[in-house]
Amino acid sequence: MVKIPRLCLVVILLFSAGLTAQSKGKIHGNVTDSSNNEIPGVTIRLTNTQTKTVYQMNTDTTGSFQFEVPAGTYEISAYLKGFEERRFSNLKVKDGATLSQDFVLMIAPRK
Figure 1 (cartoon, rainbow, N blue to C red):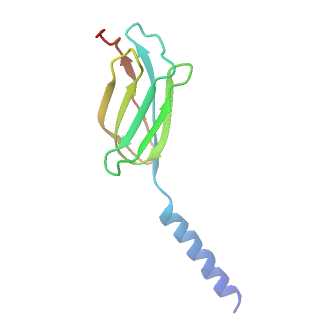
Figure 2 (figure 1 turned 120 degrees about the vertical axis):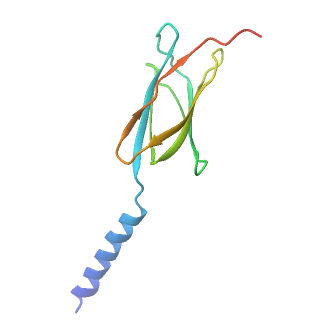
Figure 3 (figure 1 turned 180 degrees about the vertical axis):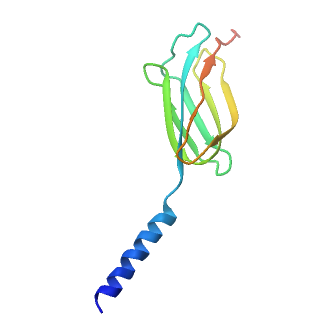
């Protein structure tokens, strides 16, 4: 009799763990200038358009970035002082898939 309740508990725990697991995908890319030079330190901001959850990071020394996020629809932007901000909308992240989004930043006009 003791084995049946333990087995039920194991099945319930495994089932509930599956329900709470989120489908995830990746967005990665590179940021360069108009001369194709990599730009480190660019702020990349990723916003889930349904939940309004914001993820943010800076590009690494090679101008690269990568996010692992729940599947959904996103808007992504790249900003660095001295450059014009760039933005892309309606990016669809799918479960287990990797989406690539590169940026080419232009020097901002002087004010």
